Image (cartoon, rainbow, N blue to C red):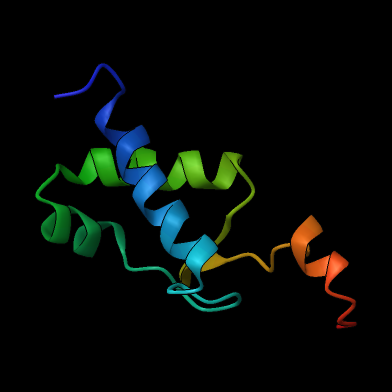
Length: 85
């Protein structure tokens, strides 16, 4: 149990998957129904988690298409590596 709302915890889990590259840029994230089933939460909790991810700038939702991972700007560590994109 945590004092943090469940939707924030779910958003954190999905956010880590985005950061790790498990959920790639321009690719869809699982639907709210799928997230609810996979993590054993209510659909409303999955919807609020998606809203949280949109507010963090990690995903964008296209009506009728789904939610997609946003291309993330390079981090300071990748910029220091000297690789140009």
